[in-house]
Image (cartoon, rainbow over the protein chains, first blue to last red):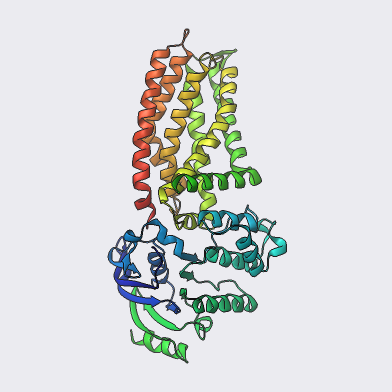
Length: 233
Length: 225
């Protein structure tokens, strides 16, 4: 059994050579949470996302999924993790459908009906046979979102998911994230865009220079709170 | 799950290549240019330099292979799709194996063109012992691809990857190249020195086993940042 309903970083530090990307970060997210990792560029947000995705190994400390270490859960753990990063993880030479088919098979997800539904949600049902390299940034982003969610992951990790999107696309992504959290997913978003995070996230972790400065429920006036915490750090 | 994932990655690379043909064409063109340039240098008045054919064949394979490796992983770097592959719920070594088999397949196509060309231009009796030649090329190509795929994957996010790949790859594959050239030279003797060729094939197969064991063992830790 590799599913889980919470994910924890326990005193996690990560150094890249002499550079300290994360320093003693402890953080917990539970099913239903939309946790915003907020901080300036280079704060360590992407390193946290990488550690949660099993792509970055902590130098010290550990990541636990439902109280268990990643090693104990094996490769099957990654069946429950979905990652959407700034780079979209799509093959531009393949069609939208071929991309989804490949990743569905890779994750052992359901076949054609799931892919049809994903194309429908991405508003690309009639363009599934077209190569991704011909798509606009917004279309690619919608497709990448569905690719990341194709296998219905428990832990949904988004690293700057709103980059390059217009207002309409942002609202689509935001409502999809709310749906996921309502359905029991653990949603974690790394962003430096406070306007987009405000009203979307249910919890806020403020990070600067690899340190967790604050972990609190989201409340009105996120920007003022951010300035206050970052200003005093 | 392991074999299925490796096969999926191979099929995906094949599907992309069928659509773009980018790596195949550049690899073939490069390999052919290599052999043609060597033939201009080493064939004087219709008479090729003694024993040049074996070395030229393997140099062309190695250079074309380096190009194919770089291009193959450039494709995975472009949209960071290698990270997406590493997130698959399968042993990460299976991803490595799939990529490695893709490189082997590309080089096999290049060799299918290179061997007759080298035989023609250098008057080399490469088809005297076809089975042994195929075994030699297969074992050498697999050995080169095992090491090359591991280094190319390691360097995929390095800024100086184009410079670093040959610097790391060529010294490590020297034993493969020596065995390949010496084995091919043995086959080009008149009559063919089959016991020597078989010995070199055996050595290449042993190197393949050692390299593959190390690659499968180290791929996951090397790819985890």
